[in-house]
Image (cartoon, rainbow over all chains, first blue to last red):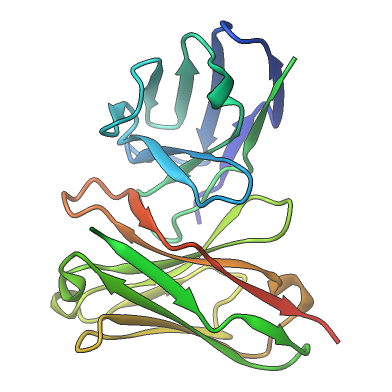
Length: 107
Length: 122
């Protein structure tokens, strides 16, 4: 099974900051990497799919990069509504494992 | 509008069984694989398993943590997916989400239900 490792597990930042969250797969997953945002009490919402494709309706300040085993989610200019928990997920092969999550908090 | 609505959660004793249901609408259910994802309180997301479509032989796959105890099934005539959970453990306590992958083949979860809470406790 493929293991997904996210870092950092938590991050404090300010509105307007640029932040990057990374995700590493235990083996190559090509570009089958998705990023989700989850707010308390809500189901996750996809932001980025196949490593760098922006889901319709998601602000352009979100971007994804990477291939193979190393991936990144970047938020260019943090907005108040971006403080949430972010998860990566590989969809290369079942079981479709998630990273452990990165909680983005207001500094 | 795509909707996924889970039901069947509740309190069950360790070693017991519970069956969750997910009713789907707004998309071609019979052609879609259906997945279950869970989340323990304050913890991360864990992919539980999936059932593929009839065209793919209704194949199922499961996370190692539930394999042999959980079974996913579907009834395309009712647009329903099910998660039968047996031999439940306290660590199975979580909110269980029903979810589908997008239809373009990009393999991401585009729609999720609201979740149903399963509590395993004596």
